[in-house]
Amino acid sequence: MRSLTIAQLRSLADIGDVPGIAAATLRHGKLERQIFAGKRNVLSAAPVDADTAFAACSLGKSVFAHLVLQLVDAGVLSLETRLTDHFPAYIPHDPRAREITVAHALSHRGGLPNWRSTAYPLITHFEPGSRFSYSGEGLFLLQRVVEKLTGEGLEDLARGRPPSADG
Image: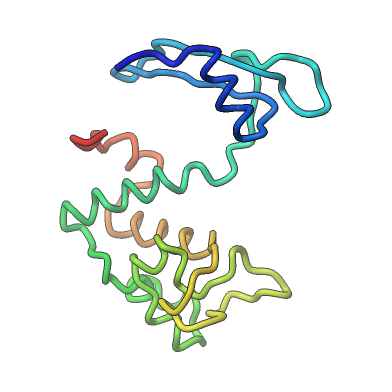
């Protein structure tokens, strides 16, 4: 596998209209290489470096989804597992919530809001599976189910799972 150059990294940042970018290579859990390009943010001329903190936002969701699919492969749960079978009191007065499955949560099709609020209470806002609506609440419920079924916290569970053969 060839190495990404700083020029290529800058080009990727330009394509995405991103002010700054950092990349790292890990091998066997150890930092092998870091490269940086651009500036820390649109208001600063300070360059991106090893001490630059980026907002990660929802980047961990894809890592969590991979972990869930490993658990599906291992038979711990299935894509059809109903989440409220394991947490019936999580959304107690919403019959549609009983239909939310692992697959619905992973694909943001469970009907739950992104995060509950006065405007968006913790109820299903549409029939699970009928359409897409980004939902942190759905993934949080799935996290609770995974932790209950495995008896491990998410961080410990993720650290204890080997990477799959495909990456």
